[in-house]
Length: 105
Image 1 (cartoon, one colour):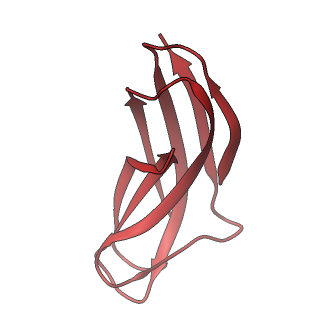
Image 2 (cartoon, rainbow, N blue to C red; image 1 turned 120 degrees about the vertical axis):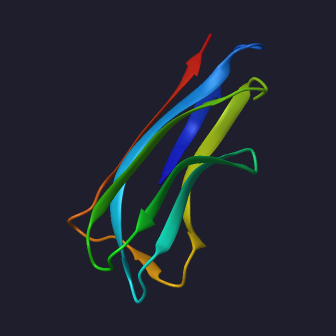
């Protein structure tokens, strides 16, 4: 998921991100996922979740305030990765992702 052309205008403001979604794992129990928003090449972890058991759709979510982002126009990319375990992260038509980014004073 990419939020294109996000504009941050203030010198002292932050970027706030709210993210919720769901997914499932296959192949192995005890697999952790980390979901991040990437701004200007920097990964900012927003949510973590441990999936156990496999093949069970479960939600994740988080809220993050990211300071020290210079004014400018950015593409915000939402990425996930396996943080621990050996299972495979999946999502299908039963899953979703919702993300909101905004500038805070």
